[in-house]
Image 1: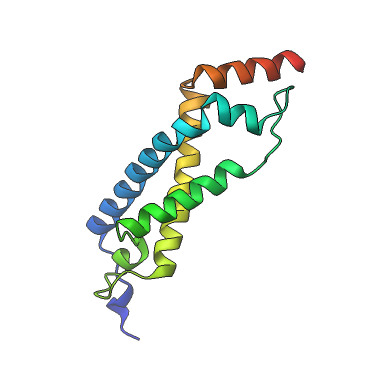
Image 2: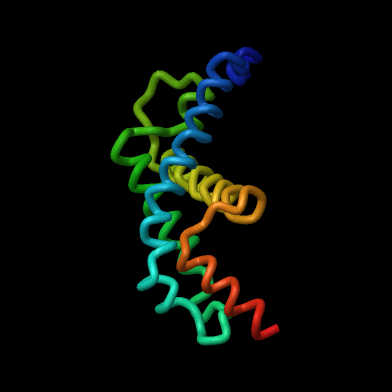
Length: 132
């Protein structure tokens, strides 16, 4: 096996990681229009503020991220392995899953650490705290 086959180009790695972070923020902000709307919050939470449809946000984020990667032919695995071949379906799906996971982390950063959220989300949190 050729030892240089899996050599990591750190400049390329940095560019791919920065791209993933940027795409995660873009997906997160695009999905916040849906996730922070009163309609979505009312349909996915009970009157006491608990979630009644667990996992729906993650599924939507995953589908959106994978679709985004397919639309722009973004396959981080192929790029990092310096393959001259075309983008692969598996690599594109894995990249989409990584971006979806990153969007969940950025949502947590915005809401929990920085306190940025819609008024509908603030009302939902207040209802949940008042019932506990």
